[in-house]
Image 1: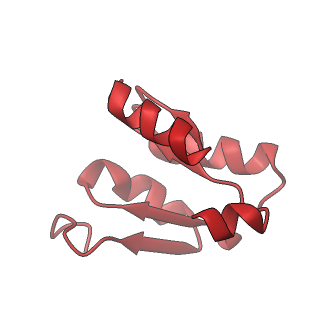
Image 2: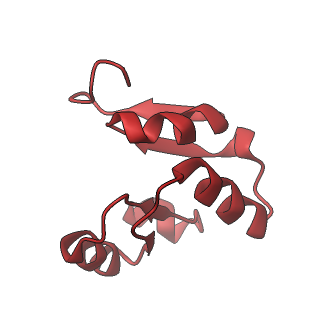
Length: 88
């Protein structure tokens, strides 16, 4: 992440929960975070649009069923190795 940030690649962490641990981790990494999100796809698309990034050029990394809508709107959907079977 540090190399990508150094290259100017923007990041966003999206969480369905309001979690102080997620917020602290994002701050430590220097990554923008949005908590308490019901519709991750809309948040991701809005964030990309504000930065002039086409969804087809974006990567989304997810692991749970609530990530599926966001995974479907980007060009590079990535499921982590221990993701739920539905996500894999």
